[in-house]
Amino acid sequence: MNQNNGFAVEGLAAGTVDTQSAPVGTGSALDISDPRFGYRNIRYNSNNYEQNMAAWRAGNSWGHCRPNSILVCAIGNHWKKGSWQAVLDMVHYSNNLGYFTCLEEIMDRCFNPYDSLGAMRNEASMRAMQGYEWLCMIDNDVYPRPDTLIKLVNRGYSIIAPFVAEPSSGKPLHGPHRAKGTGIQPVRWTVLSMLMFRTSVFLGTGPELWNDSIGADEGYHFQKLWSYGHSPVIDTDIVLPVGNDPTYPLASLRFTKEEHDDFWNKRRDGLLQMPDRAPVSAGDARVSDVGEYIPFANNGNAPQERKKVIDSNAYAVAAKAVRIHE
Image 1 (cartoon, rainbow, N blue to C red):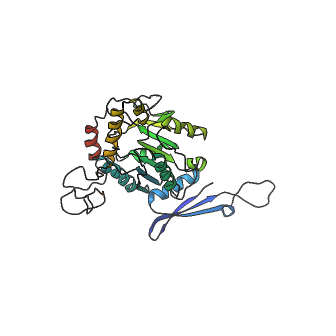
Image 2: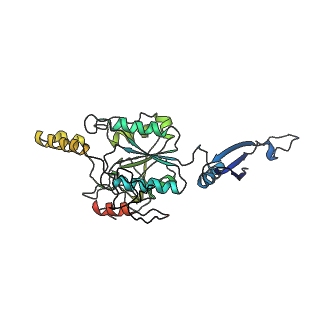
Image 3: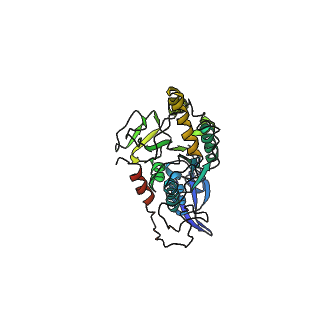
């Protein structure tokens, strides 16, 4: 039997006491059903959500030092217009609901475009393994809704992604193809635009799961995960708009020299652009001193309306821009 008693702690939301009953023996003169024979687990919680989740897990699952904590790792900082705000609104929303959530941009370690994306993803894994329960790898041209992150976490799958389609064609970017709006579906592979891992996955694979992406594509890496006993699912009810079609580096091998050079020069030029972290709406006061959107900032230079639940304005604007099929 588990008993979870919340009690007030100065400076914290509450503490919990979990009593795990002693195993029942036979032929004992002692009344080991007495709760004093049990084993105590005492924790201090940073907010009510953490207290409630820890209490629920004590009787239904297994604990974590920071239940449902999430590290969102942006792979690079080459933000497309509106994507930074959409991702930060999502991070801010989950924090407002009590999920400890942080965002880190992973340094671009590529000498040539895409040649060290594997190292960047490995760095994200190592960062998340320092105490987070979940890792979300995310690209710089995605437009999630504010509640996308916590919806994926609450599904409870160790590897899960939203439904992503190629903007130009509407073709699903996973295999085999699953119909939109059909719930959780198993797949062999999925595009890496937004991918959630329970960090315990990396206890088996090690943090250096990812190889360099040119040649070692999604199919290779998900086959590698399969060899460790893991396979992904996608939530077809959560649609993630993306700004660009995927890049297929190996396809450039079939180009003429002129086409090949133009393909790679355009990508190098794109990587040299200033990251666009500006707010979607001109005059939004939630900006830093250098004009970058920060959801909890207020420079007071323009009026603003604060809402308890974050407006999905960034998502709405971006959805039109990328012609999302909904």
